[in-house]
Image 1 (cartoon, rainbow, N blue to C red):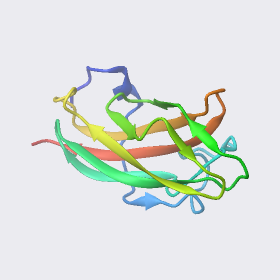
Image 2: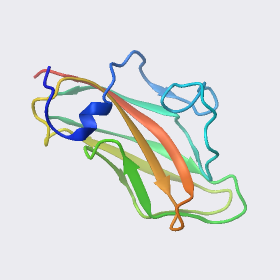
Image 3: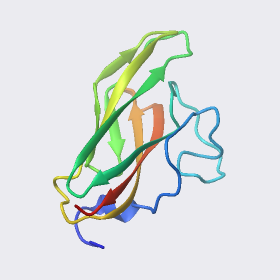
Length: 145
């Protein structure tokens, strides 16, 4: 197993589950702990999104949906990810009150061609004033070519 590379690999965990865990069915926080989560302005269609098996230095993508249950427009202008290998599109984004918006999660491992193993990437979106708009975990298993 490759142990060097970007700091994000420090956060990598071995995967045990497959598929998308609906936010309403998830227990504990997005990282699986039993801590109480911070409330978010937007709801995600998945608490945990599993991209499945990705070949070494490969890429994968999947869509999830953000829903605004509130009565005010929510703007997301910044996303943080525990790995720079994961990007969300579109950013910035706006979700109207009562509305939904599809978002694309794109994993690209080209910058870490030696990595093999499990990934569990924490992702969070923030409003212009720094409020937590949403969070989720994106998982994948990276296999040798």
